[in-house]
Amino acid sequence: MKTAMRAASHALALGVLLVSGAVWTISQQHPLYANPGKLLRLPAAIVDAAQPTEQAFRIGEVLNQYTHDRALAFRIADALVAQADKEHIDPALLVGVLLTEDATLDPHARSSVGARGLMQVMPLHGGKWGCGSSDLFDVESNICHGVQILKAALDGSPNTRVALLRYNGCVRGRNTPNCHLYDDKVLRHAGRAAAEMRLVKTQKSE
Image 1 (cartoon, rainbow, N blue to C red):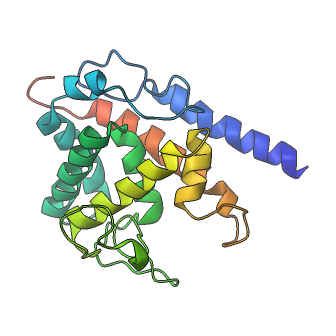
Image 2: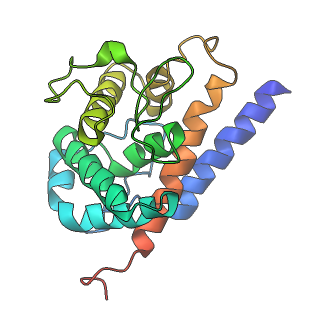
């Protein structure tokens, strides 16, 4: 029964991604979610084809739904796009992780186990990733640390789902209740964000 429910949950998550269409890029020609089971690491050519300013604007508009601080939403968007471009990771996946970790977009969020900031980074990681600052309550530093941790998980995992579970620390499924559902939550947020990003009006699209 549990296996069947898990399979149904996976099907629903993948269905959301397929319904939302390809993850948004400026050219809208690259089906980045065509195979969600594989790593969402993008070739440099695909990332370089995007225009960071417009991409950040679209993400900022999506994130603005989660906070009353518009300036913060766009600051977060700029940081996400910068890291996505640097590490060739789909920005929609980063949005998915961010919203799963801290849907209120509170840079000073702190979990019961001590994880800090937007990407809920544990203090032991502070200053280890060449992010220019060890302050995990700083927007840019926190996102840099979070993306570096995710990148390491992607590099060492057979697929995106396993990488997401490792990011969450859900290696054996015993650290937190229902942590095995973490990957589904991230992919649902990512799929929804991708669909919403495509609908954002920009000067170029008008």
